[in-house]
Image (cartoon, rainbow, N blue to C red; front, side, top):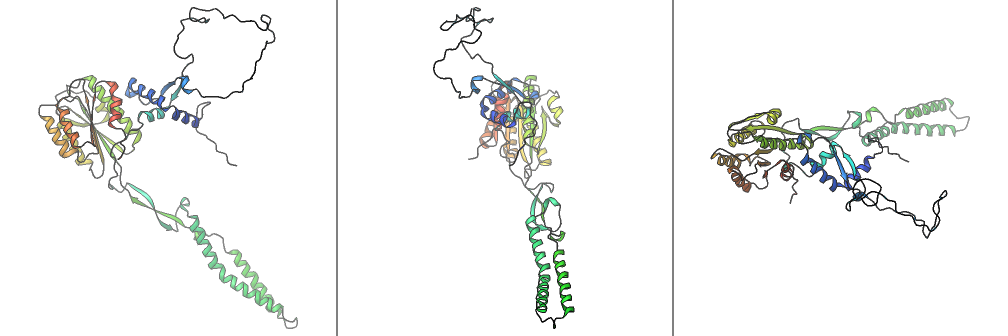
Length: 427
């Protein structure tokens, strides 16, 4: 009989298996609660868990009970007020519905509390990013010799104990025992036959010296047979592994944000929340994704994470400066043959005069042929600007690799994010 002991740390009176079954069963309720929480709370507060309430009527389960059956009339012991057949008067109470409690009664809803439980941080983020992915992630050619994986390359005589090949080792041991014991067995058989032949002779003709020599030889040969080891270090064989270069699935996400004067503080806060949500998504799902942050007004600059999210700048708007810098960074550090390239851009759509045309030319001729995906969000409650119209032409050229959405208020961030990075079903 085998015993399986689950030693995972759980809270008191909780089972990890039952908890996962419960979450799968009420997935739709939990998902709605998570979406409400995302729209309600700050993105910087996204990493903590969430309290989820489920109506009691939705978690009730049918049960079977054995009833008493028939008619039963019972008078409990100690009853001095009632006798069989008496009718009990309804007790008086407040003005609600005859109850003894305070307050007003309601003619709607259930009379039971909702069932509430807590989602952990990992469970909460799993629902937040369920069904999302980096589109068109491809396995690239070998970037350097550090990207390798161990592969089987035959059998070796040396190696660590963890790689021992038991079958080949036992086969080698058996072959060695056969090779070493066969001549000894032949000599033992010949000595045994010679001893039997000598002992069958007439006692007068027996050679006692010869018999003693044969017995000593037999003992020596039997000792040699026993001395042959069942398994020797010479027999051990190990699986030989070599490091083989493997295709890389490295990706880089470029975060481009407009910080010009036309971007109000509310617009910038929405852009920051969008990129923070993107940052959490990448950090959770992809270990080999690098982030590059680019801010721009009339000029573009590559910055670190702290400056990207919290620095304050103003000025005019020339979006092509950011796209030009993006192209230069790709050329110098991230060859398209070795990296999966993604870009997420946030802007209010405002741009300097004819610069939107330059942006379209840069996108179609230089950037989009090398990118896996480009996501653009326009943060504005008004009509679309010139940049939106030019980007629509880019979307027509690259419908599978370019996506654009409009964000009006903070509540639109999460739905737009899911739409931009939803998992695509391959045809």
